[in-house]
Amino acid sequence: MTWHALLPLFVIASSLVPGIVIFTLGEDRQRLRTALNLGAAVGKVGLVAFMVYGVAHGVSYEARLPLTSDLDLVLRADPLGVLFVSLSSVLWLLTTVFAIGYLEPYRNKRRFFGHFSLCVSATVAIALAGNPLTFLFAYELLTLSTYPLVVHRGDAAAIRVGRVYLAYTLTGGAGLLVGTVLLYTLAGPIDYAPGGALQIPGDAGDTALWLLFFWLIASLGVKTALVPLHRWLPDAMVAPTPVSALLHAVAVVKAGAFGIVRVVYEVYGIAGANELGLLAPLSVVASVTIVYGSLRALRQRDLKRRLAYSTVSQVSYIVLGAAIFGPLATLGGVVHIVHQGIMKITLFFCAGAFSETLGIHRVDEMDGIGRRMPLTMVAFTVAAIGMIGLPPTAGFISKWYLGLGAVSDGQGWVLAVLLASTLLNAAYFLPLIRAGWFGQRRSPWPRDERRGRFEGDSWLIAPALVTALLTLLAGVLAAGPVSVQQWAEVIVGQEYVPASPR
Image (cartoon, rainbow, N blue to C red; front, side, top):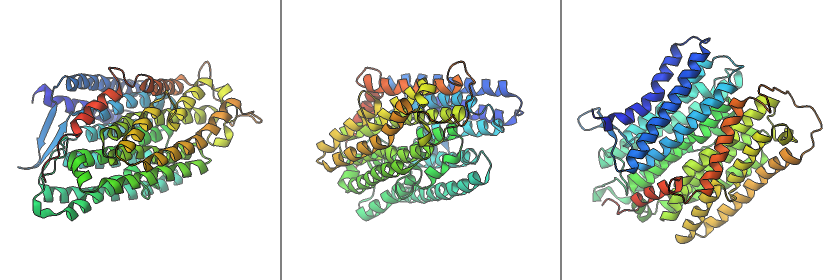
């Protein structure tokens, strides 16, 4: 195997191998475990940076592992996959730092960090999957590796939620298995391809393509938390905060949305999906989820559950971008893969710092928290403003291009959805910001753990400040020569090529 074939395998192995090693270490080997975690995370970022540079300069990285005479597992670094890999690797490093500080007082750190590494390996494999079969394998590995993280606390509530999580995700996975078999039966073994990979015999008929498309979307929609398949996500907030951050910003939910993007753009092709009339129903589902998630978030009193319903809404911006025909909407959806990740993980980092430092779990307990934890509250404020979609944050860039794309495609009604969502975002985030900075504290904090010199443990606070800064930079430098938007424009240019003949 050449270096170009080995690099995708090395990127996956950079978290897989340390994770396996961590399982063999004793619980008391904390320093070695920390060194392995941080070293692997830094190493993965380095490998991915090398991959990004190569792909930007036209280098092809692909590994093919034959299963049968006509079926291969394919790992390939294309621009869309590299975007997701970059997000996953950078946020894994920051989440690892956060988790080291968060889990310090708790037990079973070996089990947690071992499965944590396996989860990231599966996520990276999803990003690098070069065909639907490889995606299916990695998608199911992600379910198996995240379940122990969801039930990590081991109490009755965690076990109950774990059953719900498995019921939803395994059902979605079984559906994806059936859909992948039907896809291969209909079209034969295919690889993902810009503009669409399907070359369907003329006698297959549009009905078969319609049914297959929505079967695949429904199967992927479970992890994407599309309404009405979303119930598992708010319930999963019983998991430790680093797990919540991973589920919402990097792994499970984002993997589902990424799969939908692959189906629309690189299985059917955006032009082919538009010709078949598949995009309008998908845009309606995404819009309903956006508004519903925001309405439910407004009613939540638990801070993490409010953030969870916010994710239900925000991830569907990615789906909405895929469902509007036109390069501007595609650009908005693609950049939101990254923008939602950095904003949402900031909010969960802050929620975790609030809970571990002051014992704050509810939105009505946040009065005056900005005076006690000003740096953390600054990060929370920046991310919340980004979620609302105000300039100069990353969230503004996403909504701007989604709105422009909707108008360009003659779907002005989408502007009403974006406006309603923005107003609802403001309704459930601005009161938290006001309470944090201007609320008057009338009772002691539930607890006060000053593990650092200033406002708390620096392992908890530093990652939130970094991702808050990224939220600002992604907005301010959106048109810069090295930015998420510039990379997304390359992806858009590839996807709007003539669709494969059916």
